[in-house]
Amino acid sequence: MRARAPGATRGRTSACLRRLSAAALVASCLACGEEPTVDSDPQAVPVEDGVPAASAVTRVFERRIVFLTRETDSTLVVPWFFTARDGPDGVAREARGWLARNGTWEAFYQETWRGPPTRSPWRPLPRSGLRLVVGIGDALEEIVFQRGARQLEIRFGSLLSEWNSPEGSIYRVHEADVVLSSQRVGGLLLDMSRTRPPGGFSGDWAFLVSGDSLEMVVDASRASEQPDSTASVWARVDFRQLRWNDAVMAWEETRAFERSRREVPVAWRIRSADGSLEGTLSAETTEVEAGPGSGARLPVYALFEVSGTLVVEGAPFPVEGVLRHVQP
Image (cartoon, rainbow, N blue to C red):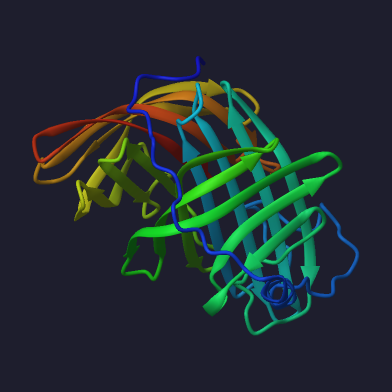
């Protein structure tokens, strides 16, 4: 699939990133210091919705952080996914990082490991090549990846919006900067935290933006294994906060993914029950993986760069963003 689609250019840069003193930086690194672990076994810790690594997982914590910008000639996307499965014998953890630019996805980081029981299993932890800078109140302020000559940093900026779901999920949209190959690029960042039971379904979600006019989160996790999914939608539109609890995100077009022997959506339609929100999205670039399993069909985990047009209360907005799709 081709990369890039027409969309408003984002010119927003982070104007008030907080800086830590050297002493505070040391303290923050200690605060998020790595737990003691046993030897890592990639086969023992599942990816996202696979079979739980421990026989008695009690809770699954998800932290999804996605940076998005169009300050460059093409869309730059940097997703970081942190997952922790808490159980009486310890915490199974996974950290993953991707970079999408120039129409190509690169899965550049994946670490799985186990740690002992902890009072804060939800807190992301550093690992080989990955450092986290934490500020006041355990607020994540920087994600720093360095391995060999390669370095990539995400720096959180001003908080623009915060939304909470009835299930306890938290969605925050920040201004942010990415530093890649000594080049700093400004954009927007979604910081999403969710908790679910071990047998629950993590579901689909999307982060969409339109210039400086719109930021939107679509959460279709309640039934997204079906072509038509009930979705909750939160948006900041021209500095107004809007919410729809009864939207539907439906598949408009699919393509076969032979490795999983499934159909994967590549176009979607979103519409609220009252019609005040409607529009379409199309995949521009795709990162699709087959999950583990022994059945006739394997799980699907996909990340899409998407673009399209949304009409909000009669006003059209050209949007672009990231959409996460899962089929268990």
